[in-house]
Length: 347
Image (cartoon, rainbow, N blue to C red):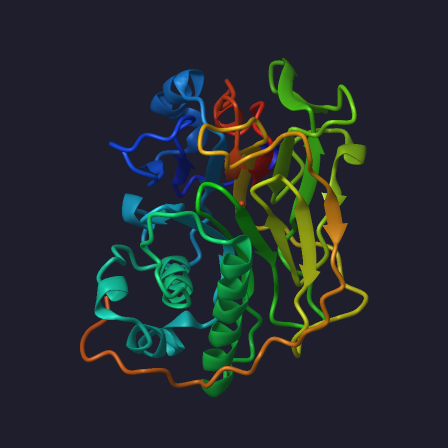
């Protein structure tokens, strides 16, 4: 978890209500600040009191864009929440292409100036109804993620960009979660991503956390940029160029991303920023989660990402790793905002 205090270019935490509320709607609540996460008293106060079945948390190491709250992850659109660990290489060379591909509505939602928020806009443009009130099918979010990666690669290739892009994306609709560990290179390592699951994630002494496996049930899933405990056996390395899907029933599916950068013997890891996602398995009033059944499946999906035209429908005018489901956001800052009894956490 100490990876979270390497950088101080701002942080953000996003979460969903524990119980669905028709008046409040399905959109997540997001708290961001440009202060270091470990020094923010408001984060400590919030973490002590907020309960949520799904939490995203992100500590920013600025690679593009100014240090401002509008540039802090995660971002929200309707019921969707998104964050990014990495960078889109030489983004300034494809920025106009990205903007021209967007509808006016999506274009105008971008408030910051980071490559990450524009990548979120590209993701939204892959969905037929990005602002729908109902949960999305996890397969729809997965395909939108794959298409986003493919489009960014295609624009980069057209612009003659040779530097590799690191695209560890995470998106959720409050019910399912989709994450990528990806780099546009066959020889370089992607930014690291790990997976852990158990009965609960707890603090056993100040500054020390562990994943508890009390029985065969696994009610919490954590995906993190770096292991959040000292027990290496708790963590599984997600292979480079892989899509991870956590379904509404807490099944964890991993799909290799088979494109021109696919490597059948993937490399390990390269640390970058930090983001965390937590998803909790406790049943909800809307029936979105079922803690009685979950499994981890490695899916040998050998479909090749379709080639994407470098030019999309034009836009007429201008421009502009923590995720998790948790029973309670934990107590130490920033770890309090990440550790919880929630079933899924992504960092």
